[in-house]
Image 1 (cartoon, rainbow, N blue to C red):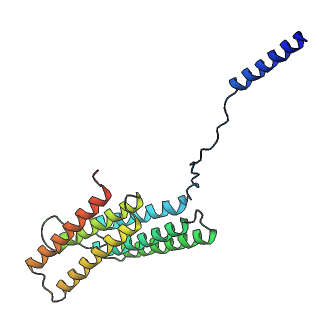
Image 2: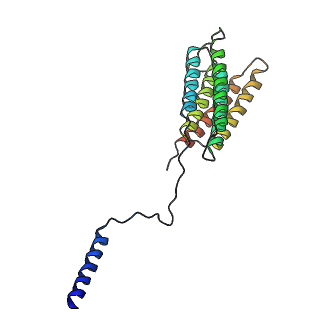
Image 3: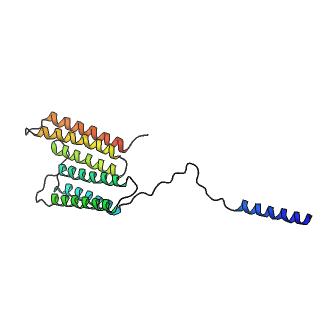
Length: 208
């Protein structure tokens, strides 16, 4: 009897040791969050980057004016907003992908038409004048676009900034309407654009 009890005791000890040595199975904690994989649209993203680069080339060569570039970038941002809305439920359907591809193809064709319109415009130089103001407006548009692409600006923030930019653009058009833009009007436009630029940078690069 003692032998049987001793044998049983040794077996139980061996089993206990084996369980203790076995690696513990990872169990999800009570607050484990499972994030769905991010929806990828590399072909569309590459097309967007190509269009952005082409707009920049047209602007630098003088084949696209700053106002044309702003309008084209605005179209590009609208497509990005649509893409983000499609991705919001964690999937992009084949029909939605095709819609985005069509949108980018149309925008690309519009960029090429602007570049191939057989006329050039002076590239804005630093200093006074409306050329410098147009150049500053374009730089702000491009910076907003970069902020959206890098996810450092939310779509809501970008929309608000673009609304301010469009308001300045309408004011500039009103100043131009009588054929004369006074020095005071130029200063007003530059001050508003500087304030908008500072707001864009503050949102993109927040200080802790």
